Length: 383
Image (cartoon, rainbow, N blue to C red; front, top):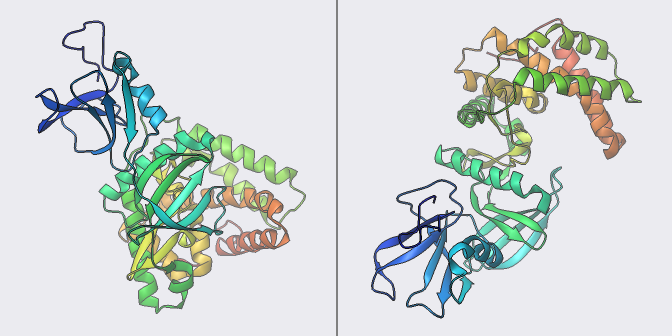
């Protein structure tokens, strides 16, 4: 990538182009390979072959490779290599990947993506997630971030393949053969609930070890814009809850806490509802709302955990901080939870009365835990 063709000074390689050591092509030289999906120059790269370029008027064919899990359509490959293949009578042959023998829809969760449990011809199950074309950039980044998390050892639904399909783009992930954590953890012994909480907190700490991009906008500015929008949403909402004025007052008094906060990768929806238990271990699922921001903001969903198991919720915090929870965290947690509460009612209205009541009860719980925002540490927390 970026180098000049050895025989044609006017041709600069826009993609990586190399060869497979020790494997000879039809011209007696080592077999050439186009490497797609790697956006920086590399000298060596372990990859997989996704296609063959058949040249009718040349002595050898070329191979096309891409990183594990990333696929390209025949049209995309043809366009990417046209800078050189335009001078030959060539045709691209793609190499088939997984073949599915069954496809069962999954009707759980809040995402607009279509989800399926698919079974390959070797009997292995996968999670297939299909998103509209306009989400392609977002989903490609999500796939890459998930690959980084796997490399860090995060227990999660692992990314297998990303590519385009008739309905948009898809991500193929490993299938978690377990049970929803919220159906298991509340019924375990206190010590088991706490142990799972510690595990979930330590996993979150690893997730947050991935830094945000250097060009990420300032967090204080970003979140203040979000706060302003949520306050307006609540004021315009026809449904109100008692104690909201205390939440708004806490927010306004503590906006200064947002200054100079670090930013990292965020799961985006980290709570017991996006965890499963497989072989007695927690597995994290559904990175649909991933983002970059203050790592402590990620705890705003701890409310869902506390309503399910206060021992588990306490374990998450203690596991994350290794039992040394700073006072500044509690102040910010109250701010982030308060912000979420204001927008929860307007969010719930389109989903009907039942969801609205769920959010109203949650607001009641939050105000009780924080004694109408007079206490910094929620009443459910256990050291």
